[in-house]
Image (cartoon, rainbow, N blue to C red; front, top):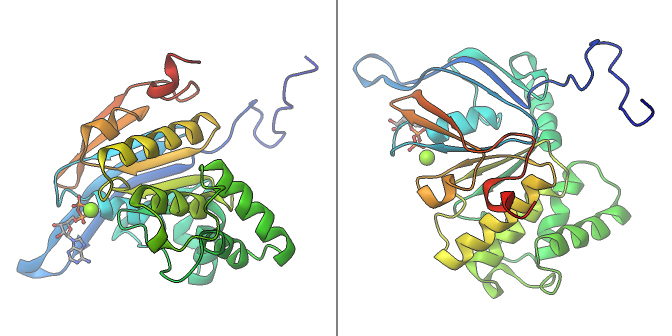
Length: 257
Ligand SMILES: Nc1ncnc2c1ncn2[C@@H]1O[C@H](COP(=O)(O)OP(=O)(O)O)[C@@H](O)[C@H]1O
Ligand SMILES: [Mg+2]
């Protein structure tokens, strides 16, 4: 009794918390008339805190479109989307930006680092956008770089880092604000197999520490690391396969734990 967390009085159920992602019937249509593209044809999706989801599908199947909606970078043509309990459709552009800074971390295939900026300053930037006081930024950025294994490389510029190291800086930058959700679009697309494996090890560690991760990939080896795999075909989810329970370790760490 004494160790159990208190139930949320507003909900009446112990541990009740909204899914990180709750999307209903998302439709995304680009263009008009003969040029109409149905990028999403009614996608519904719920992702709980702690899950690790891989989204697969051939080129043009709608993966990036879905990730952009989940990431509040784009609004659907129709359908509703709640991010961590907040209905995104109700928000102004300013509120959306704040929500994105607060709840989301992004990692991209091309790393998207600033070219003349040291690793530690790259990681400090989102803290500045989030309004974190200056004196707190450096220690938090350093701790995050340490956590991704780059504690020795804090002053390096992107050109002085390998691809795998650059992607680790990007992961540190994405996570330094403690977002509810890490979104990654083909994060291993520009990495060799060894760096890919390193990054997957890092993702597994982050997920077992409680981070929720959604990763787009076309590589089976990447999808094998997730707890759940969604397959998109022509704008629809055609498969939703669970590989490991949400509240356990990801596949890579399953045998160890
Ligand atoms: N901004 C856009 N304008 C017009 N068509 C788009 C746009 N973005 C994506 N599409 C089209 O929507 C479909 C899905 O694209 P996308 O989500 O990028 O697929 P994936 O990431 O799976 O390769 C494709 O047919 C693509 O050409
Ligand atoms: Mg894409």
